[in-house]
Image: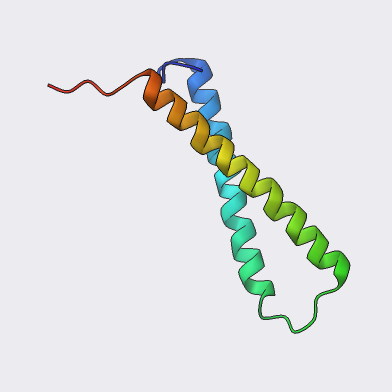
Length: 77
């Protein structure tokens, strides 16, 4: 866990941004394939596997950000 201001925090933020962007692209792809009348079993398994990975990434990002918020509460004036 970082304090939100160092190089490690910036690296984590960059990785999180990439993970979330990949998830967003995957959702667009899935949305496009919903209109396809027949997907093969292999195509469906592939999509489910990628969705599983993207959801896991999104949950890790949310958990990490939640831990950082609890560890370093905002200062109010």
